[in-house]
Amino acid sequence: MTGSMRDWLVHAHVPSPNFNERLAPVSMVVLHYTGMQSAEEAIARLCDPVASVSAHYCIDEAGIVTQLVDEEKRAWHAGKSFWRGVTDVNSASIGIELVNPGHEFGYRRFPDAQIDALLPLLADITRRHNIPRANVVGHSDIAPARKDDPGELFPWEVLARHRLALALPKLAIRLVFDNDGAFFLALERFGYDISDGPAAVRAFQRRWRPRKIDGVVDGEIGALLFELLLERDLGRAR
Image (cartoon, rainbow, N blue to C red; front, side, top):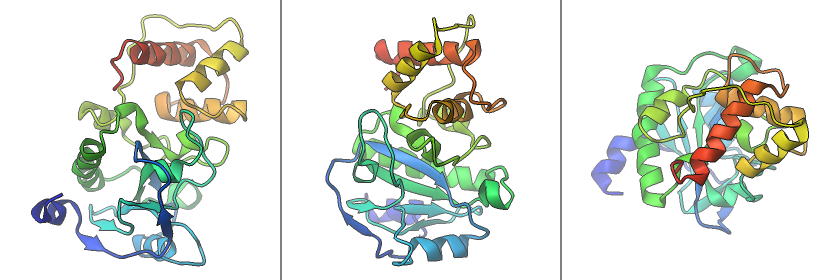
C-alpha cells in the first residue's frame, strides 16, 4: 500500500506487543465488536500484554482507524475457532475490531461513519490478499459456541452491496431438510463448526436471518443454507 493510501485508510498507529509469526497465508477477514464501553478502553486492552489479545485494526464510532498489528504478523483476535477446515484462524486472517459496547454494555447499531471507514479498508485488504467474499466472516461465524459479535445489528447487506461479503440469497421456497442431521452436515460443508449444534444454528441465523435467532432448524434457514451452497457450487460465491 502506498503512503498516501495508508494515510487515507489508517489514521493512527498504536503498536500492540500481542502478536507472533503467521503459520499460514492470509485467506480471510474476521470482523469483531470490541464489547467494551469506550474506544480508549478497547485499545488499551488490545495493547495489554497481560490480556494477550489484539487485532490488526480497530475502528471507532467516529470512523478513526487505528492499526495495532502489522498485517504480516499473527494477531490474537480469533481464539479457539474454525472456518472451512482452518483451525488456526489467527494465522490465516486479518482481524478488525469495531468499537461497540456489545451485548453486555448496551449493544447498538454501527454508525455510518464507522462503516464508511470499514468499507475502503476492507476493500483494500481483500484485494491485496485475494480474499473471497465467503471468507469475510464474523467472530460468531468462526466461534459459534463462544461469541456473538459483531452481532445481529451489523450491516452485512452494506458490505454485500460493495461485493465485500456474500449477499443474502433470494428464496423461492422454504426447504426442510430430511432431518436435522442433514442440515448440520450441510452447515459444516458451508464452513461452520457444528460441534455445538444449537450454537451453530444461532450463529447462522445471526448472520443470515437476524430477526429471529432461536437455534431451531426450520424451513427458512434450510432454504438459505441450500441457496448459499448452490451459489458456491456454481462458482458465484467468490
